[in-house]
Image 1 (tube, helix red, strand yellow):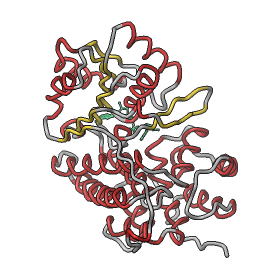
Image 2 (tube, protein in one colour; image 1 turned 90 degrees about the horizontal axis):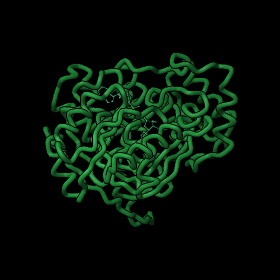
Image 3 (spheres, protein in one colour; image 1 turned 120 degrees about the vertical axis):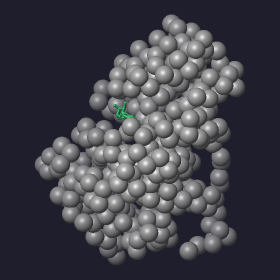
Length: 363
Ligand code: NAD
């Protein structure tokens, strides 16, 4: 393992307040007051109106109502409508109750208005800890980083994720692990984020295995949410690589579901990078309690009944070449150079759901 002295780094901490406790949802009004806000617009998807109504009730006179127009990938039209609605009701704060899609809508509003966001995450995707936004326009998802979209306060209440169905919990949790696993070999990584990443993977993997046995295990739900916080924090602080590029391509250009795609691709991306990032692999494997990082992720997904093949989530085999070309056309930095033939093997294995094999780096 490298010592700190062998590695130069710059670490800029992202400012955010985290309130983590069972029942912390009940502190929503006091957290809004702490921000100096007086009219909080509560955002949600149509599926989570009940939780949003509860937030609005908790806010009482501080509520500017519920807006239930959050959608996957934040289409520009929905962002425009939400911005307009926030202006109409005179909102001075947005409360996002939900997963990455709802928090993403809050970010789209904040990007234009600088409205502070209070995030109340109910999945493990981790968007609440990042200054990254994404908005989809004419079929293309554009992402960027802007500190205005970083939620000011994050309320983690494990009670809100007890109802997250097991299947969604597992893929959402492995989506979170992907942030930490790639953070461990990030070009701009640092020792603090590596500690956070390893602990995040450990907490999430252990929590997921427990909730697979009992989805109502409160302590396990807490572990998963704690892992989500740590893994999301890694995503917010350091750059991502091949795995995230492939998933953005498959989601953005082939409309594959976000968390499921991450779950399937991660083991293969780690296998691809394994020889180029041995320390990161060692840390990921250790956090998973296994000897091989890629194998450990593959086992976690398959043991917990998650999808393991792209062909099972709507990918056409004939499109793999196009996906590879798109991913290569505007690549992210990666510890191992990107080679088309090896990437096609990776995508082929991910498509069939084959156990990943460490791929030797070409001389
Ligand atoms: P999601 O927010 O799209 O939620 C999926 C569905 O689950 C929605 O219908 C939602 O209402 C429902 N749901 C959420 N929590 C629930 C609960 N506790 N009980 C029952 N139903 C619940 O899914 P996601 O995976 O959290 O987010 C995916 C989106 O977030 C993608 O668009 C992705 O690109 C984005 N994302 C962004 C970042 C970032 O840093 N900007 C990070 C991670 C993900």
